[in-house]
Amino acid sequence: NAGVTQTPKFQVLKTGQSMTLQCAQDMNHNSMYWYRQDPGMGLRLIYYSASEGTTDKGEVPNGYNVSRLNKREFSLRLESAAPSQTSVYFCASGGAWDTEAFFGQGTRLTVV
Amino acid sequence: LAKTTQPISMDSYEGQEVNITCSHNNIATNDYITWYQQFPSQGPRFIIQGYKTKVTNEVASLFIPADRKSSTLSLPRVSLSDTAVYYCLVGDINNNDMRFGAGTRLTVKP
Image 1 (cartoon, rainbow over the protein chains, first blue to last red):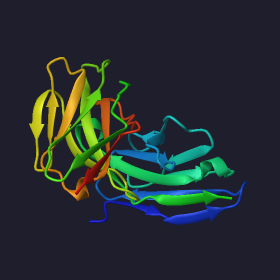
Image 2 (cartoon, rainbow over the protein chains, first blue to last red):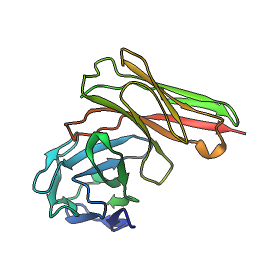
Image 3 (cartoon, rainbow over the protein chains, first blue to last red):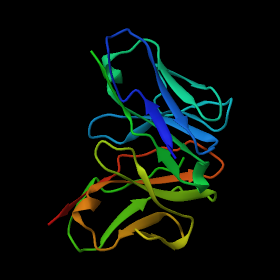
């Protein structure tokens, strides 16, 4: 049972480049989330998806887009990367508040 | 969304019981209280969840007073491996907007 799988694990981008972070879950959860975590800080919610076909903005959505491709997959896209987007990105899935959320291992992104 | 307030950091020693309190004065009727643990370089991991009174599982207890304006996570007999950041989350079961605050950094010393 893989749980939540994120790819890639590490990435270095140049300012202005674009990339897509992939996330897939095999637990049949409706809800999926993208967070970023800067060094020494808590997690901040970028976007979430309550179900297939729906997405909503979180605390820090600017500079990001998401796609809920199907129930399993939720991708995060940086259209034009900026150094301020250097962070660790976590994907999570869970059944909303009455069940626990499961997190991926994270993607460490550096924008130079 | 209910705002939560936790201590930034706490220190303890091995074998002691640790209690971390979270304040959530504007908690709503449909809100649940959930705690997560995060080790360095890992994603958070669910610890415990409750609505009212007391909940206990194999790793922790969660105490919620009748007014539900605060909650206390209790870790019995901590060890060095319990050194981590602990997050208190409060949210409506009908709202998937799940936000973490800054958390409490617990350091367990030998």
